[in-house]
Length: 339
Image (tube, rainbow, N blue to C red):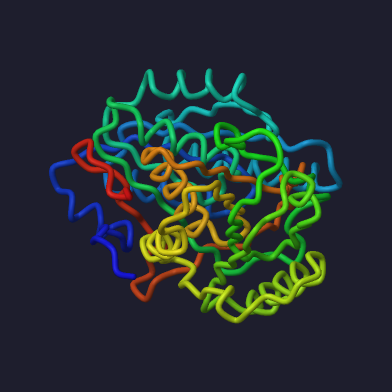
């Protein structure tokens, strides 16, 4: 299925394609991963930074706590050297829900000037899904770019004690009672416990978005994820149920989701366990399906804490610049990802 053209590519290329926008507000995170500093520092080096608002999301107590705290302080010092006083840190708790997220958004919106870059590289899904919703719908935001920085590699241990299946804030279940939804899962590294989903409502059909090619040894972990799903659900997935998609192709993933749900008027459940760019496609598809009056929910097994070495380093392009994928989501107030 071939959809409309939606501009995306290297961050610097996309910014050059929008020459009328000289300054940008950056919303990102202050975390343990090296790549959390990349986009703010890039925009600053290009003299295009209007403001920088960083969410410092506190995990719950875990064995990672001390290492995470040390790594976060290293990233904060780098930000201070690169940005001076032009960034602000907003404290938040990982398990925040709408009563906590709504005031954060109100705080952010009060200082945004219209052209926003949302860097989701290190933002937990429950935060970036919610912020994407608010930025997409806000009439104050004229232009919205979403960025994902690619690390050199991922660590061997990503998170600690994944929680039970639950719906992401503002993306909750549409219907009460038992439902038989179409379930679409973005394949990732962490094993999904499908039994939690069955307790919510037996999926009628399961489809998997499989990232290909995956950065080694990611492919092995992805197939282990698929095998785990097949074992827990106790049914054999058909080859056609596993749909390959490039892990950075948000636009193509959006079109694949659209194609899988053509004529689907019953509820669709999305499980974003794969790469950030595929999770972005799921978030945008959920918002588009909502806008069309169709039922959709998004759920996840939220870990209470992430490792300080969830990812390591930042991958570089051949010219030495950081590898940052940028996706134009809205321009002149018009959304690009619609049904």
